[in-house]
Image (tube, rainbow over all chains, first blue to last red; front, side, top):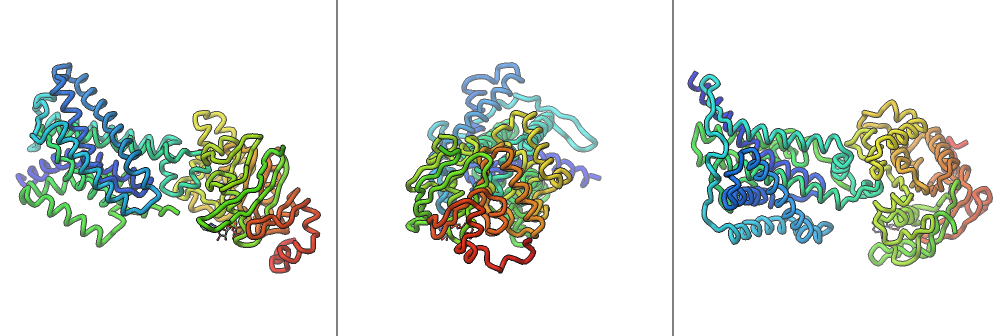
Length: 303
Length: 244
Ligand SMILES: Nc1ncnc2c1ncn2[C@@H]1O[C@H](COP(=O)(O)OP(=O)(O)OP(=O)(O)O)[C@@H](O)[C@H]1O
Ligand SMILES: [Mg+2]
């Protein structure tokens, strides 16, 4: 039974981390669905969110406010700030290239990732910073042999709420329907009266907000943050998005959870050094065996 | 001045001049047919009016307001609706969602959306039975009904249709064109591009014939239907199968 206990313990960890990946993966997938662009800055937007949250909590001292108020500020303000950053990237870097070659945009996206890292290093420095460790109670409880912390529950619930909100928006509103329509046909969407540029901006805002939220969550969960933290995060979330079938929203969420679980099992049963080997090995295998992703019906190609 | 007024339109694809001075106009309640062979410039004309293409020169106005240089999504709000060639419905969305997008500009007026949807379902009862069905799984005829219904959701003053009967069985083609007549009778100006010249002229009031980006012939639909040149070029026996 000890083996089972370990397994469940790793599962709890995996689902927690996986929900962070899922949030970032959603950003990749929403933007890709609309303009066929892999926004490689997605992971770094998460890092920016983490640092904005840290600035508010630690530098500005909001950690001393009542915890609910502190948390609301630490999530909402970075989400707005990061959305503005992503809108800037869209406007100045991607928009002039949107009707040009995909390769130019792809390279620009990589450039934006580096730009955010360098900007963060300039602003916040190269040192590792720490989130207030006692923001949420560190304690937890046992379910049989499995230890679950309140932080884990709070973060997973918050992620699920954000994902639920996103799905409700995309499935339940006319603007969300327009976002799905853009995956099919931009010109036909224009003929409906849809302001395509505005909908693209909404997608960038949503992607950035989810990334920023995941960044703050990472800060709360792992405590330490660093300006390079977005790189591996982005890569794993990208893997998650591809696993789920890029452009596919439920796929991104499931892919994120899967990557989180893989990572937790690998760390638990092998060692942390094998994490990336396994994660990317799985990515390559999926790409070879089922290139549309595990859940992929193919996203309709745009005309 | 006519409701829709197009003057001396010149449109290029790169260096190729696709429209070489097109002028036409349409009045409320009128069906104006645009005929012409493959590559004549019919689709280009409609795409330019709806703002998907920019003319190099010339003027377009609807109800006295210029449409040149206005974004396509704004032109919809000015009362011009375009059912594009090949229907281009959103195949991953269901019928209801396609119609909702047709009413995108009035999306916050739920009551109005409901009324317009009801009107579309009255016009095309088959769509009402398939509200929740994915548009991509509709039959060709149903997809065309959806494309037209979607365009009607914005209650256009000018409705432009690019080959609505293409690929439909003759009976269905006829019924779609009959519906188009009905739409015009309610007060819209209809610009109808058709390969099926005989049926188009049968329901149209006025017609233009385009060749290589120029209007080579225009006049009352009944007159053009009897014109020898039109009969020879566009009413040849090849499409007589099934047409009454
Ligand atoms: N995107 C494009 N790029 C370059 N040339 C184009 C483009 N679209 C159309 N053309 C050219 O412009 C001319 C007019 O095309 P258009 O599509 O308007 O013809 P059409 O009258 O609608 O023909 P059809 O009946 O076959 O639909 C053609 O010579 C066509 O090859
Ligand atoms: Mg055409």
